[in-house]
Image (cartoon, rainbow, N blue to C red; front, side):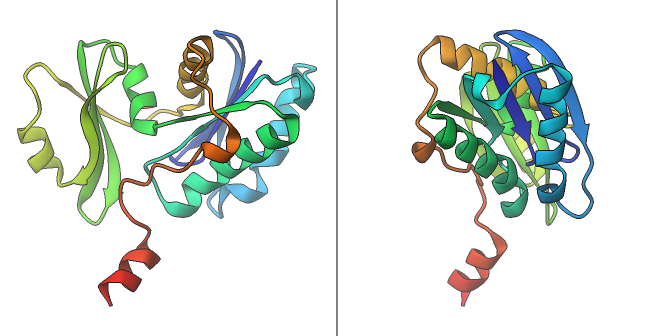
Length: 198
């Protein structure tokens, strides 16, 4: 059983999967932050499927890029659950998760990073990185894309994709120890940038 969660995007989402089979995905809306809704919705999701937290073999979370607080909510939850259960965890880039929905040989997912910029990357049909994830202007990035890359703006909930990618990584023995998992911010947090710039 895999429990996947994503609070790095809007809307957020959680998903429960039995191996490679999706059981349910729940879309989360939290205008005041995900901290108050995430654990309640996880509890409800598990109860609907009569699954105990101790039955989860892997916890997976969207690791960013995204806002500092948005990324941390799901990532910290996944790490905490996995640490308590003594099991593995998988962090999945939300750009890679967006690419999972594509069908082209080269997929170029991006999402709004604010300040007139986007988070963006390029992946192949196997979701392997072709171009490293960056934060930049959309026109600058799109002008330098490899031939045939299909632009994909992140709009849909990502938990089902995160669960599917986590299942593949588990099969390949690539799940991680929770202590080793970290966020993928791409851009430094606002507070860090202001501190360094001073």
